[in-house]
Length: 130
Image 1 (cartoon, rainbow, N blue to C red):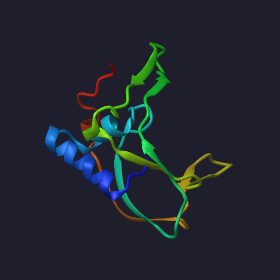
Image 2: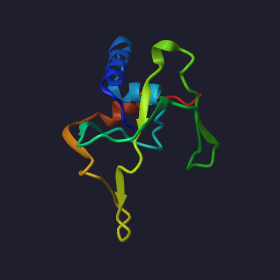
Image 3: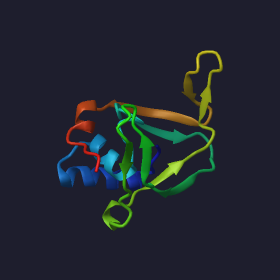
Image 4: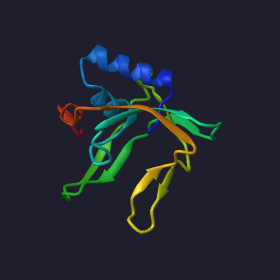
């Protein structure tokens, strides 16, 4: 998931106001269930050239749980204006190695400027499925 600076600042403000971790704020505002990511790394990146991207609000998430107890359901927060965060989808950023199945970022398109380790426990602490 990619955010522009303005959306990221909104996410940080939300985390600060509610006294929760950036990882938990990301789960809430960007609809990222633990099944999709542990949110262990935050990355600041810049594009190396203009790219085409889709921009939009997070949508509700419904995916099956691995334990067979029913689906994961996360309703979107778009009806609350203060929680609307524009996310970016930039197609073609990843390359999958056909031999190993590993996915890597296309460094000819994106330059990683910095990364930060995030607290995985804080990104899940208090997370509830409703």
